[in-house]
Image (cartoon, rainbow, N blue to C red; front, side):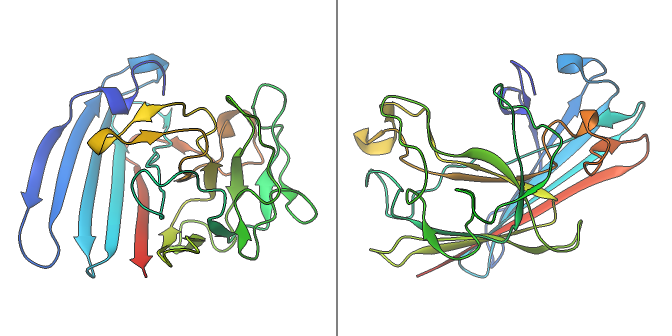
Length: 243
């Protein structure tokens, strides 16, 4: 977190296999004591692996070596299953395996509540078009940017969400071992240029970021995100694609 997050530092390639049935690459970064205000040294490894022709696995491990520190690493990939440069994702059908969410205040900070999604615009317990109940604000804003409390046993791999593009039939199923998942609908994208000259606009993709609950350090009833010296933080996720 901070202006110079882990997405803006240079990682070291520790190991890679580029052939065979399960190619992978592992990156390493050592965060120094006080970096972006976080206490202690943190050794971080991230492995990206392709397997089962259409599965992408991401494994994140982090060890605190000197001081207790909050750790909440996420993957911020944007997904549009209709294909490159195909417009918005408002018709994508989304199912979230999460019957509760963490409401936020006017500053987008969690209030400390964990509330049921039933009867709210956050109810994706059955497949629902992304744009069916969301606020549309042309030019920026609106949409979704909220943490869901994933159902099932914490720290166990379990289904988090499923997304399908109704036109192409392409589908993505996400499994992970974290307590929460942030749904973000690219509310602030505006003429962002992608490959081949294609342009991505507002609501042009969605993110499903498995994570600890945001601001957990200030809410004792939330699952703890503190990693103590010698402990290992483990965050595993699998994106399963089908057609």
